[in-house]
Image 1: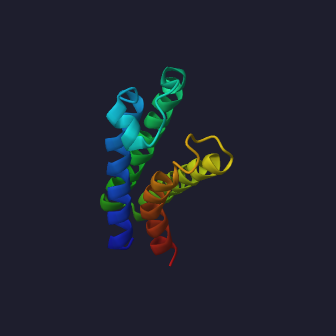
Image 2: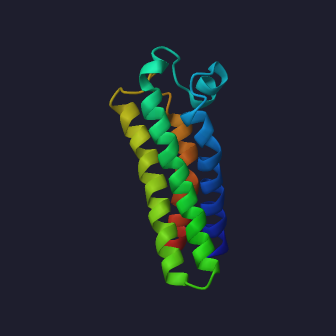
Length: 132
């Protein structure tokens, strides 16, 4: 697996793991709401979902790092497979955030653009590098 794909995977994974506490535990803090570009109104009603999203994102990040570890432990095909599955999850879940915005589920509308682009680039680059 190319070094660029590995670096993109590792950075995307670390970002997802780092953002996990914000989504899962700190979403009620105003500075986290600004960072995540979400409205504070009714946050208590969505904390369950933000917790679940945070955990799922952390698991995707852990999966990406685990795939890299397996890759470097000598089982290249299994490592690449785990990395690709993790990257596909990262990319598809990020794109789902953009679709939710297009459907009008994000408040304010258009608020997901920064997050969707930021969370899509690294997995997309890594997948392209792996595919080529």
